Image (cartoon, rainbow, N blue to C red; front, top):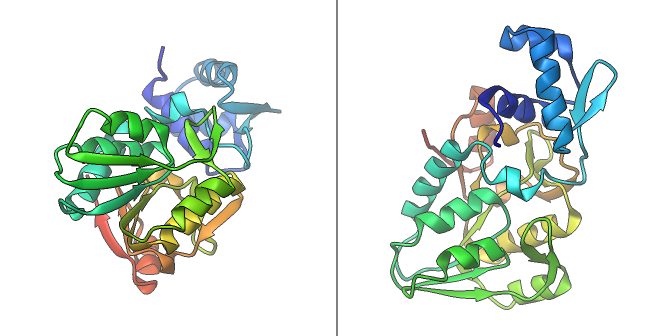
Length: 252
C-alpha cells in the first residue's frame, strides 16, 4: 500500500529538517496527534524516517530514501519536469542519463525521439529504453548498487571520461544555497560531477523538495550547470540561480 498525500508531505518535510515534532505536524496539517502518530508509525515501519523523542528525523544524510519509494514520491512534478527537459534534447543527440528517479522519468519522455545515443549507469533507464530501436543504449561498467539499481565506482568514472556528450541529465539528492548540488553517497556524487564535466550542456532535473535536504556529498556548484528544470522556486532561489548563469525552466 502506498503512502497517502499527508504522509508524502511529511516525508518531504522531514528531509529538509534535522527533526520534526508531533506538535509541528499537528499544527501544519490540522489533524489530531493520534492521526500524526499513526502516520509516524507507518513511515517508521517502512524505514523512511527515524523516531525521536516527540517526533521524527531523517534516517540518514549518507543514504537516500529506498528506491521503491522514491519512484513514486512527487511523481506528478517529476513527470512534468521530465517532459520539459526532453524537449530541449533534439533528435540525433548523444545523451548521458545519470542516477535518480527523476532522470528515469526523462528516459520515459525520450522514447519518441529518433536516432538518440543514450549512455547511462542507471539500470532502470536502460530497461525503459531497451524496447525502442531508435534509441541506442550503452550501459557503462561499474559496481552495482542493489538498493538503487545503478552502477558506480572507478570503472564508471573511467567510462564517462572516454566521451563528451551533447547533453548530460542529472538528478540530485539535495540543493543548498551555499554548497550547490548535493548527493547522499560520495560515489554517486562523483558520477554526477564527472557527468557535468563531460557534457556540452548539463541539465539538472530536481523538484522543489530537494532544497534543504540533508545530503552530505558535494557534486558541483550551481555555476557549473546550464539548465535547472523544477516545479517551483522561491524568488531568492531564482535570483541565486540566475546570478550563477543558470537557465531556469519551471514545469507545472
